[in-house]
Image (cartoon, rainbow, N blue to C red; front, side, top):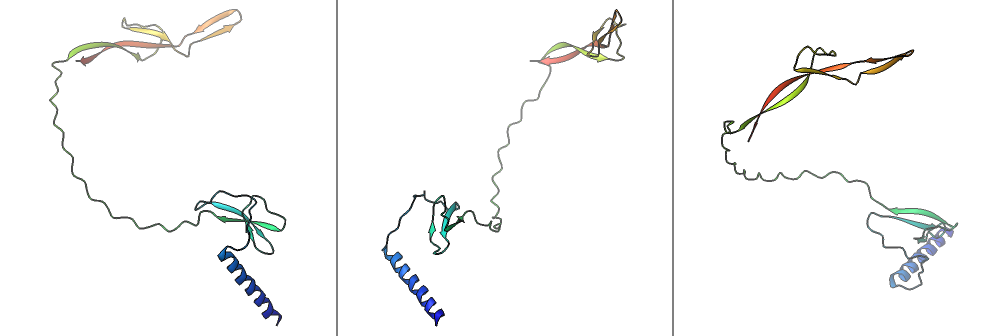
Length: 164
């Protein structure tokens, strides 16, 4: 008998609540007016532990518990691959350029220096000359200072360049 009475009270409360809510009777108040929630956004709410009434506020009372609603749902399965598009038209072939010739170009000669081997300080050839490398150092033993030379020998050669 007690169980039937409880179900009757709960049912009556739900029906009255639906009628009041449907027709807009009753008062509603909000502590804050939050911005409208966009689809996929998260909404933090407080739910009363006894009545399960829900409010959207920043801080919950001691008689409420915080609940997070919304947010992105689980990722769905991947859709089927679409049909392949039509093949486009073939583009135009460009004109063939004129055959090249170096006969109309001027000849210029550029002097080029390149490293020659073996590398030693001093040169036996008139076209070679030596420069100190980054491995050259000074050393001191007592009052004597010595230059420890490390040289790179450069040899001159000529390169032919054709210019318009």
